[in-house]
Image 1 (tube, rainbow, N blue to C red):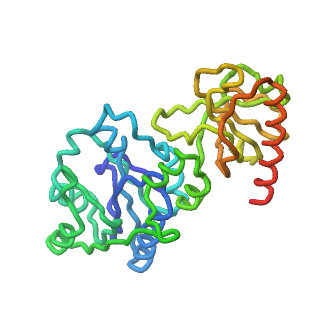
Image 2 (image 1 turned 30 degrees about the vertical axis):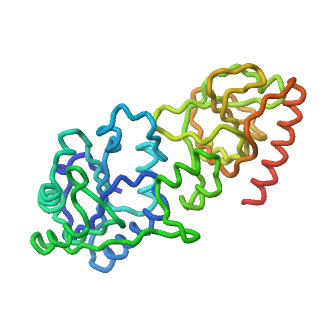
Length: 311
């Protein structure tokens, strides 16, 4: 996949088949659109072009809104789009100035002059341009004027529910991992660096790796205990994860800790990719460490059953 951060660097293919959007999550709805994009490109002997934005538009337009959490970091999104089979990815810097571009100027400057769009595929209810004024109806009007065809892809349904990034975020914030994973089409994951913690898990016989997430906008699922898979140096391990404040030992700071089964390496400073498979239970304050240790034994047993049966 070719990645560009400016239109000026993009070399126009003969038949650009284009889509545009934020694509947070690269979920089943996005893949439905991307697969149609690839289908048209193959038929027309063209190349797929996906235009997205960084930072996320809402982070620029509403900088004081601390509520927005994203399903993917920029690096994670790029990797998933490459896996989806996109030929060309254009990541446009989203600024206040860019947000003032009218819908007609977006079409003229970006889609036509910048890319030479021949086919445009957009998702259901897609809006673009200043104040989200541009719609599918506008694009149908602009297409014949500027020499491109436009197609709208209906929303992807799972169990008669339209898949959206917002619904996935809400599910994760409630600990509804399996629901979120069903909408995503893959297990939700976080990427983080191992940092030093209090090493309490080691004293209980369950050493944990404390995870630091560099991107403050990355969504961390609800507090609780999870069955997870851990990717380290291209090897996959089973494990269990705790998200929360460790109330049994009087913790006050939210931490992310993972116990990797059958793993004894020192990995401080190294990167882990942790995929959430199932929510086991809510975080709980135990009256003593022995009771906590007994519960951790149960959590491990339950995690192994879940992770073994899911493979």
